[in-house]
Length: 129
Image 1 (cartoon, rainbow, N blue to C red):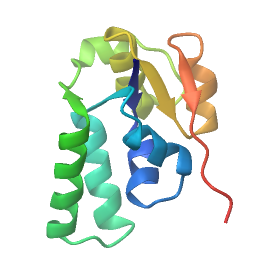
Image 2: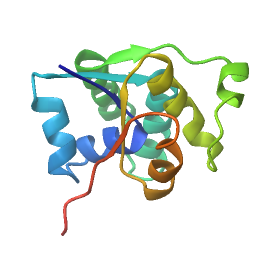
Image 3: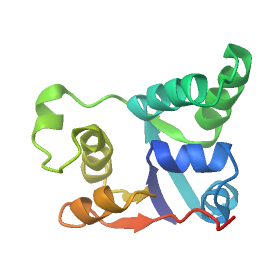
């Protein structure tokens, strides 16, 4: 069984149906999915501010993520500071993957490159439109 940590970008790819790979991560029964509270908070803000989702729509999305993923607790600030990647906002995701022995799934190039030295990481690609 694959144990996968999904960062905010992968959750967003799934919600907005931007990636068949992200969709597969949610449909494959051989994948145990994890995320954390920080990813859910980011997802909330992106859906509200960038995509104009209503509170009801966002609640539905967050409930779906909670039903399909194990939501890990927020790491401590001290733990987060121990992770060295260029984009500080990616630290909690890299840390959670490392701490719980998970494969980190992301769709951004820079965090992918930075995280490779810390955890096993796989890049989820958006579909070409």
